[in-house]
Length: 433
Image 1 (tube, rainbow, N blue to C red):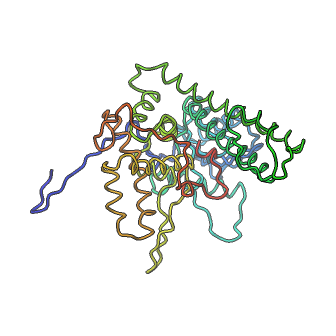
Image 2: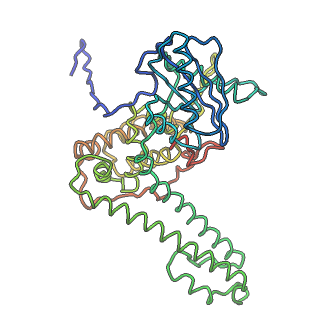
Image 3: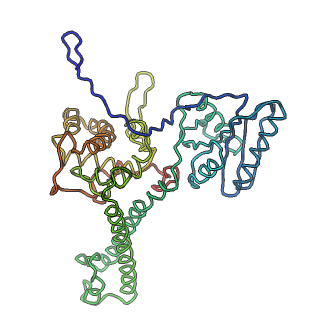
């Protein structure tokens, strides 16, 4: 407690997150006389490499085939050229934009003793002209400006922490299951759409013996289904059966891995078990949170919200003040999970501090209040859930019991619209890998 006159203020100390990665600034000072700075503009077949080499007046610009050893040989050649100009190179830093190729190049270069960073594409400033010129050469110039600013410690620049191969592989089961759930929904809707043309609405395609009932189905005229339509439905049901088997196989394998290491007190499996104890969180949600968010070691809840695209979009110019809603520029998978998690807190942790905080600020009756404050509740839900799990208690000090209700992440909510990514940003966008 801290007392200032007649005002009593409670200072809440937050637990620091372990293994923090602060992407907003460089932790190493930039010495331009002995540092080679290179940026790569990549495509499927060609790479364009631009560099700043001490002692060389020109700015090297080289186009190579998409070949990592050739890139390493080019960097070594620039090191030798700087040495002949009287500059001993002590550091080589390389950067490129995250893209569909993922982070394999960053891991490969680091394995060959090269300092490499991955830049978030949306953090690179571009011209807002209606018809702006865009070439690979201009892209390398803007990327170089952004990277040099980050190396000098300037704000408003951002890099990403490349995950290890194990961390990247641990995310695949959850993402594959999400894709299969979408495929399952698509198949069920397609089957129902076909049957609707014959005024058949009571058929359920999900039971295992659904295919055996197709022959007994009658149309509105009392006739059996046409031969081609029935054959098509058989094929759809066979695909649906295969998809459901694959989903069950992924879930069984996850539970097997969790049961295989019951005594572990640290690591991803231990954290999944701890988070799953909280009321309203199941194994699926816990697995997503651990592998998508917590394994990254983000700096604080603001970094979590920014990574998920849950930050606001203020539009302020002169006397105009308005909020355009969530930015939605981030990991759509994490954003959906955090939105669902925030609403579960309101359903199953009604007496928690977070639920009381939300209700106290949304009781004014305005339509936009819940939308504005909802974005603040979501990173706090993750932050407080993890902190509570490390203490072995539920949210707001409530210890979850063995028979308390879990809500799985694949259950739909009425707030999925908020979680949809912006147009052109796929859920499995490699920038969020």
